[in-house]
Image 1 (spheres, rainbow, N blue to C red):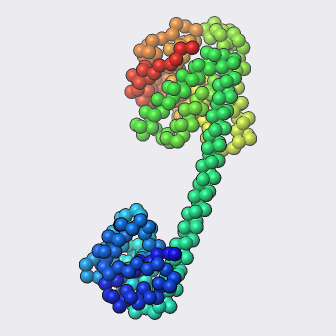
Image 2 (cartoon, rainbow, N blue to C red):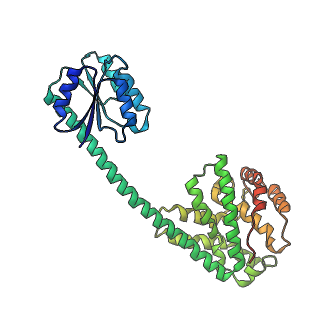
Image 3 (cartoon, helix red, strand yellow):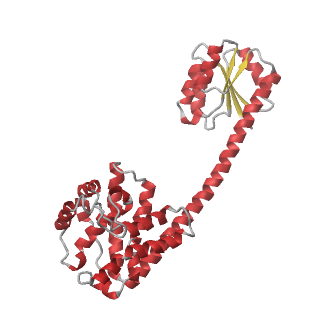
Length: 354
């Protein structure tokens, strides 16, 4: 049964309103605004509607409704003012404070029932909508969960293929994901860049796919990055396009998916340069997607520290020095500054040796 609280310091009005409604609703009669606020705060389940007198000796109805609106569990309760006042100023003030209706005194039992019925039906309709929304939200959450599981499955499938093709590239992808995670967390904390926290989680595991195009490379390209012919270097550079095209084919089936969009941009653009001298599209500055600009730095850091394109691997300090030196040419200078701020955290990351 729906609950209606009636607040009126006039006992005659209180009894009349109670008798008019008690056959239909559970009535909570209260004789003052102060007591009403105490009851409302303590009740485990607040009433569905509050009928509230305006003129009361301790605290008036305007004070009561203003206090209710400041308490989250009470703010949504419909308040209907009961008043003998007829001036338009009082009515406007009541509506401005959040009242949904006015009932003039003296009222008839029939009118009171009809007006309360209308608001109770509206309350019930709202509750029904909330129940429907909860069900829809549950279904949506389940769908999102299934999509995320599929995204992880796609990443694991590609990383498994990369591992079978080249253990070096597979481990590189795992390390890049760790570096991306630390870097993205710091970028979100700084709020300097427009990166959503939910998107960051997608970016972290999508970054593992940035080198999937290398599955198509020859054994020589994979094994000896420091001694390649011009043709081999060109084919090696094509791994960005090959990986992006593989993701694009999936995107043609699954439309408007953030994970795939990010994976595509990172595959294609992680070797673009801030000065426009990168590949494959020679994009410049902020025309390079921000996820690719972020990845470019951590990808280079790991290469410097491990294979270094066939040269002797650099120490952490040497790698940081090179990244700083290439700021504004290879890399987004603002992102480089942000990376340098966490270089000690990056240096502390450890990986299990195979």
